[in-house]
Image 1 (cartoon, rainbow, N blue to C red):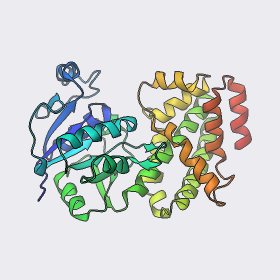
Image 2 (cartoon, helix red, strand yellow):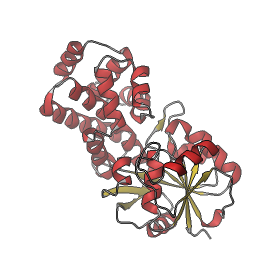
Image 3 (tube, rainbow, N blue to C red):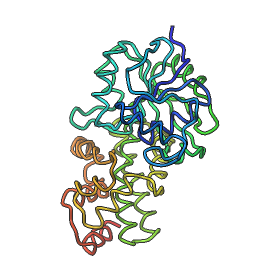
Image 4 (cartoon, helix red, strand yellow):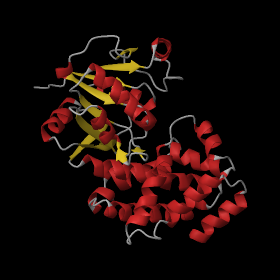
Amino acid sequence: MHKIEEVIVIGSGNWGLALAAVFSSSVRTRIWALDAPLTKSLNEARDKGDSPVPYPIPDDIVIEEKYTSDFDEQSVLFILAVPSAAVRAAAAELGQHSPKPLVMSVSKGFDSEHFCTMSDVIKREIPEAVVLVLTGPTIANEVGLGMPTRAVLSSDDLFYLAMAKEALKNDVLGLEIRRHPAQHEICAALKGLVAIAIGMAEKLNLGANAQGIIMCQGLKEIAEVASFFDIPEDVAMGTSGAADLIATCISPNSRNRCLGGFLAQGLSIEQALTKVGMTVEGVAMDAVCAIAQHGSRLCEGSHKLGGRTQEIRQCGLGRQELLGNRFRIEL
């Protein structure tokens, strides 16, 4: 029977480092980096709070190259902390080394090509894996600096949910236990489009009033898309839905919000993504909204904000006056 005595974080970006720092207070923790040069760089910078480590990493955390040391599958919780585009490959690689792992998915993305959540991606690559999902208002830099928040830990396996909550107790990240992980993953992924719109509005100097209306409209749209997917209102308006949306919209560290700002400056989507320098999960939600709009009368014509944001994003329109006018029309 599985028992969590160690956490191995696969991925050494901001989010992976933050989770490792938080969970190391409760359980032995390792960080697996991509290769030897990155491992060396991380270890050299771990006490400096500087790039590529934005905050000091506790001394008791081992940073090593992935799959270069042994582990006990029956006592490890793997945390898959890679960008959503890399989850499939990372899961496939993990499955080669551990056919029945306990895995926590922490990527707030959606596979629009196969129309599935990140936990689904992991299960398809590792059929015998037990998958937990972490979602909620969790800006990585804030978590890494020890600022308190709460997240949803979800799974349909209540035994492992209880085990993980007990093993990962800490003073920074409170864990709210829920079932039906796909519901929380969809809500978490949807909020990105709203944050992109907020970033546009801020850069266009439309003011706090306009941003409030945009967030309100975004919450309505998320509730409607959630209804299409049979997601209860308390999930859409809860920690993994509304709370995550609000945090992503107001945080200057939000990648989706930053992307919107660059788009409002007239950059193309490719140029804006390069400027952000990290994966922006909200970009992958276009297909989900499109299917919801065409698949249900309830959703038809209701996603003005999402549709307008996508149109501006895809066209790469460069004139701030035009962008501002488009938002004013919608408001």
